[in-house]
Image (cartoon, rainbow, N blue to C red; front, side):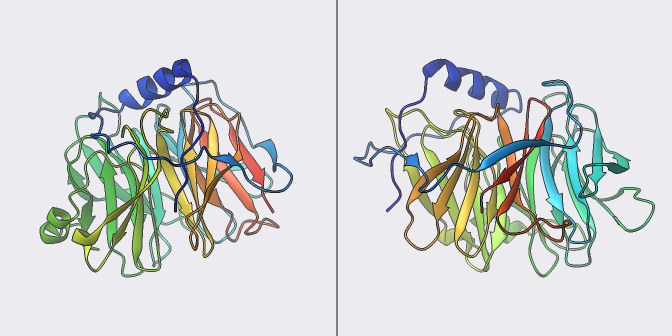
Amino acid sequence: MFHRIRTARTAATLIALTVVGALGGPPVAAAAPSSHAPLAPCDGAPPRVTGFAEAAAPIVGWRENLVFDGRGRRWVSNVVAGEVVGYDAAGQRVATVPVASPGGLAVTPTGDVAVVTGALLTSPRSEVLVFDPDDDPTARLIATLPAGKNGLASDSGGNLYTTGLQESAIIKLRPDGSVDHAWTGAAAIGGTNGIAIADGVAFVSATLAADTVIYEVPLDNPGAARPHVLTRLPEVPRALDDLAVTDDAIFAAGMTGGEILRVDRQTGSACVLASGIPGPTSVRVAEGFGGYGPGDLFVTSIDGQIRHVAAG
């Protein structure tokens, strides 16, 4: 069973919800209270958290998402600066791709990096673009959608899935960029944000929900989605943003408390892996990135810093 988290300060909650509210979208209705126990720190020594690569100014340097291309580079979306930046394992900037208000990033089965745009309230529309990280990385358009999209993930067939705080469903795009309306209509979960796919399931967070909740959405049966509630009112919600999924765990960025949460995929038990990160927006497990491995997490945040969380 998933455990209830401990109470965070009301001021921190208001700050976090104000920040995510800038992206648009109403809160999701709360579920009935439960008797879950507060989340505790994860067992063992706390992980070492250090800065990685160049830092940027808070807010204007807002890093929204990151992804590893599996070939030695990490790509980071700078939503306000309007660019997707590639870094090597030494933290050096190796490429910059101009993209207006970039949000979620994903690597497709062909090795392209996909990016969704338009999360900011000032964005007139959302676009899904892709670029080849091994070539001169110029983004090319594959789909245009209404504004407000944020999260992005790819499945093994090259389909893309995008979320949005203003959306009433998760949107599925076929490899040719067309919307799969039947699938999308069945994935009727409102106000979603973070998304990661593993083992034929999309794991999705709802940032503005009154509960702290992660949904499991089977790709072959999206109507059978089920929520896992980590906290219910009157506990303060964690305002979960993006996710990472491994064979053993789900890692989630919690904006309210500046935390990285770890949820055991077998037992459902949850704990606080790391804290003290101002407004974390995404977390990823290192893949094909220098000497880093499965115990190395990287986190983006609204304060403009990219962080390495040495969890293993």
